[in-house]
Length: 102
Image 1 (cartoon, rainbow, N blue to C red):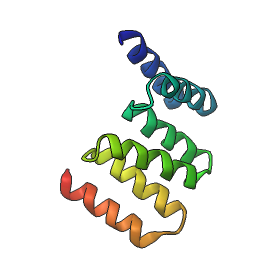
Image 2: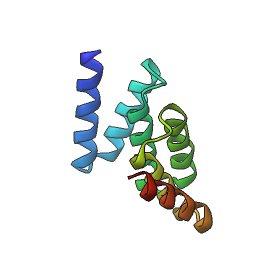
Image 3: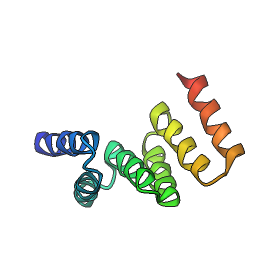
Image 4: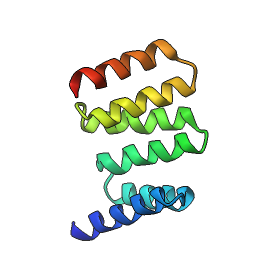
């Protein structure tokens, strides 16, 4: 388990350093071994959103929320994915939910 978390930390660092494709591959690899890894699922969604795939981002972030429904960051980024798809009312609902939970 410790190795998986170390791998996740490396993926997040790659992501923060702008190596989004490399981070995406790492998140996907982690999810192959543990599809219930909520943080990897969420960060995969963030990476997809950054690459312009808002629908894919929405799907992954919703899956992360199904694992950890009260996570404010997940809810906020779902709002970002919805907003990127011009689904403004739905995005506003997610932003409001994130703000009220924070």
